[in-house]
Length: 456
Image (cartoon, rainbow, N blue to C red; front, side, top):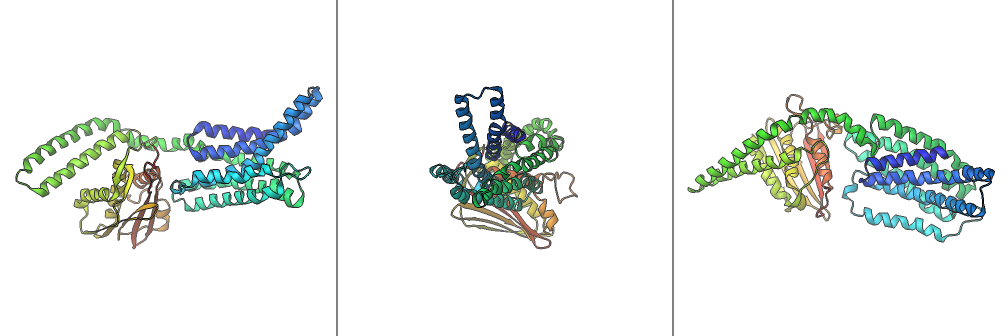
């Protein structure tokens, strides 16, 4: 059991060092620590105590300390492992950002574990199996089901592969532990099969180690997976610093002359000209906003939040893009204002990207429907076109970085929807695409009704 202790606690420490701020990282590290605590309890009983006895160091105070430590670490494993696993499975789900009940759930689910201390164990039993089995088994089964459901719901094929690796690492071990630690002792009086957990844990450690080098695993994927993307990202963004100075100068000129023309044109009240110039000014301001954000693009997107109306943002995007919507009929169905707390520049980028994709999917013209609705908890934006659509193979990879269906366009890098997906997730929202060849495409974007709900 010594290698179980060392292996699990090493993985837990590496995960925390790599990415301590992510809740999913903290929860899976907790699984490693609680599981490793069982290994430490076994090491104290099977190796440390006999060794101290042989050396003549096993005095009465030392025996009491070791007995107490063995019990504490054993209970940490028995009660902590199912709890940390079910909480990890909830936090790791793709839709977890939309669930407001995660924090209350953490306190609610810990109550059965805490109540276990109020029950007496049968003679010779380490825990009250007759009670514990009725909460540990549902926790583990539900946790495995949540991991499987999360993998099915994940639209990004690369992230789905990582989720499948997580399931491969966690599900067999926890399912085996369910029987050896709880079911067999509770119903069949078989107590020593927990020792076989070491072999299954060895398999888990091998999966984690190998996947960390190939694909990345949980927090460890950051330092490894980003290396895979860095080269391409650097190739795209290396010219950014060179272009920034020229872009800033040109944008400054645009703003200067736009304001001058606006002041001169406003005297005879040419309303349409004024509106067109306002669009130019709005676009130039947006370029400024994105320039200051783009330097951090390859690392972590930082949101600058304010109270916004999605209806106003969608209107602005449609006005800015309208000259390119040739032979396209636009239908706006705004059933609410869609007040939310978000980053103006980033959402404009998202909506502009999706609307542009919709227009490009209808080169001969068609119908573009932009719908804004609300439910009790969410705001929903639907952008639907009547274009060429996509097949299942394309749809599966639509959110993958550097994947594009626009192979004929030299300046298309395939970062559009991957970037949009990331931004929407940062806003604690979700993004989905429904499409069929010849029947058009619908993009669904959901935002929670929660002020200040996005990450910084």
